[in-house]
Amino acid sequence: MNEKQRQKWQRGASGILEPGERVELAVNGWASQSMWKTAMMFGFIGLTVAGRGRVYLITDRNVYLCRTHRAKGFTATSVLDKRSLADARLGFAKKRVSLDDMNHVYVGWLPSAKRRAEQLVTAGGLSRSDNLASA
Image 1 (tube, rainbow, N blue to C red):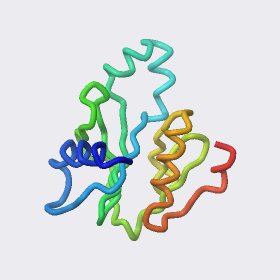
Image 2: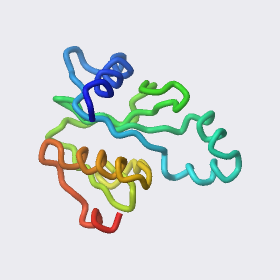
Image 3: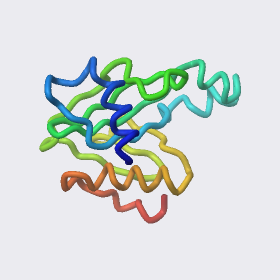
Image 4: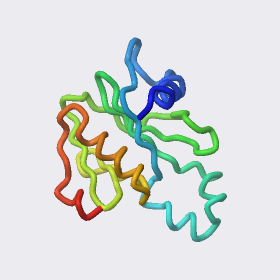
């Protein structure tokens, strides 16, 4: 992630971060359980309006799973899960990032999305999924 994107996520997550905490990496995607249902019913414009975006934020201290609203860009609207960096176990399989095999976030099929997800999972010595090669 480049510095400009990191700063945008830092500003967008300032309301949920602890004082002095710094965003190191962010991987955004969709709430994978309902993404395709919403897209089939209302199209991708409806998906954007529905605001089913998610982002994993890795800071210097914690890992956050936040709800985002795709129309608002780099803004985390609420925290769905928060773990200390030492306790977090991230995985990446089938184009989805997960925290302790829960809270799956679909990151997409583009090579750049896969690269961001790999960076997220390997950041801070976190575990990689065995299914990474098949993703």
